[in-house]
Amino acid sequence: MSRHRSRPPNPGIQTMTRFKVVDNSVLGKQATLSGKAPYCIHVYKKGARQKHMPRANLGDKILVAIKGELKKAFVVGECRHRSLTEHGVPSTDSNNIVLIDDEGNPLGTRILAPIPSALRARRDHPELTKLLALATKFV
Amino acid sequence: MALLSRRAARTLCWVTPRRGGSVLAVTLADKYAPGRQRRFVGICIRREKTGLHHHFTLRNVIDGLGVEIKYDLYNPSILKIETLKLERRLDSDLSYLRDALPEYSTFDFDMEPVPHAVGTPVPINPIKVKLRPPPWQSRWEMRDLQGIDDVWTNATAYFKRKFSNKTKLEPWRKYDLIADYRVDSYREDEEQIQDEIRTFEKEQQDIRGSKKRLLKSASHPVS
Image (cartoon, rainbow over all chains, first blue to last red; front, side):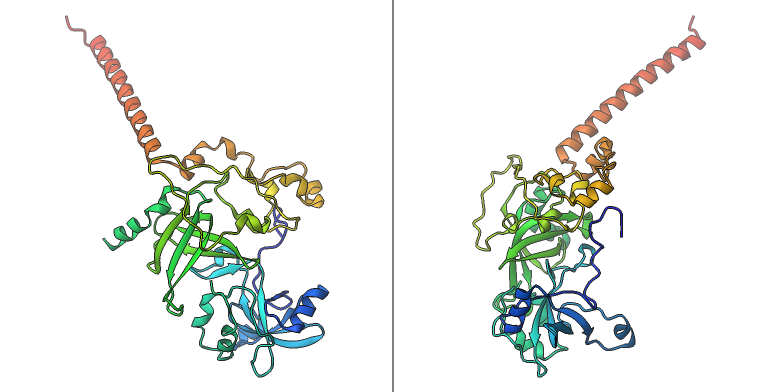
């Protein structure tokens, strides 16, 4: 840690990263109210390297621990370091997720935060379209 | 030519060189958006790099969530840049708005553009923002920032004790005049400086020339 920092530089989303749930699911609300934010325990990515050092980006599927349960989720907002941001892709103040069940259906019925429009270009997860249908705002 | 025309479309953005603080609206071509384009309004918090690599960052708080978007100025996917409010803050880098209360970076998407008369100087907004309690993203109290209200009182006591002998990150910065010149130089100022340099050199040359002539005449006196 550098002398002149109050926090280490943003390491991105990896295991033990805490999240904010931005849908209106009951589980997410309970976790927010209890003050114990869900955290990442696995990133669903292919390849030996990704399994060894899992790191999630915008639109990736992850496994989170929330209120003593394991739930799958999608990353819908990422707080990136200023030098790692891309043209036109928003970087939010918090790392946001939307919870899904094992079939890939979202647990909530509404998404309360703006969603990056770059997610609409993702074609690798068909479940993501169900989630984007709930979104009200795109940035 | 394409580059020049693209640059002409971005003229408004160039009015405030190297300074953040203006409220801008950027319309971006987006294949997946309903109208094939999307618009984002926000305060310009950062302008970095020069020339073709120049990029700027807009920040806004939407539904309680802070959103920052970086745009490359010369990227052809930018359709339009509007200046909704042309002004300057006390600092050039407003990254501390991330740690400020959300009302300081909240702007309406349907904001009416504030007119600005051509030729008049860019107004300076002397607002001092209030930060939320630490931990902060960076050690703002160590930097030479004017736009934060009472930053030293709000800083973490641990760091105050630890670095009490060193209160600024770059204490020599105020003596570095050439850095000031690099950061914001205006065309009129530059021309004036160039004129001064030219007149000074000419005078020096005249003096030297006359001196040389004198010496020459002294060594070879004309009878």
